[in-house]
Image 1 (cartoon, rainbow, N blue to C red):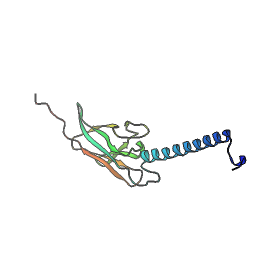
Image 2 (cartoon, one colour; image 1 turned 135 degrees about the horizontal axis):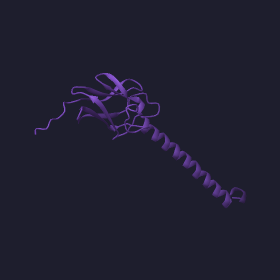
Image 3 (tube, rainbow, N blue to C red; image 1 turned 180 degrees about the vertical axis):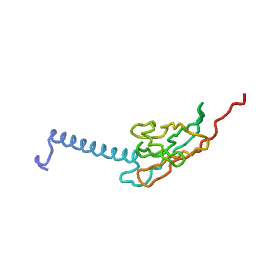
Length: 146
């Protein structure tokens, strides 16, 4: 083997630095695509998110309200979620002031007021085929037996 075929120490250092740089770019790209698929339900995914919402009655002095909670699954954008009361749109998650200004994820909540016992509250995903992600019926306010 001749001297011309060997790398100098400086050439070897540059080769290592270039390899590390390319590896870092590749790693960041993979992490970015993975994060995007977790947050938005998959790149190019046209189907509804696999998300669940719970709707629970809250007693208030003026009647009842609904506590709507993202109970698990995919995170969704607040503009893609509409809350309906008795089949009538009340507004999007964002318009109604729900938690998670940029994304609605597990544990985020929304309070929907001005409800009555028997009202049906539904959480609907609207960024594709209309899909119900949760529903609850408001129960009558509790009364204390005192």
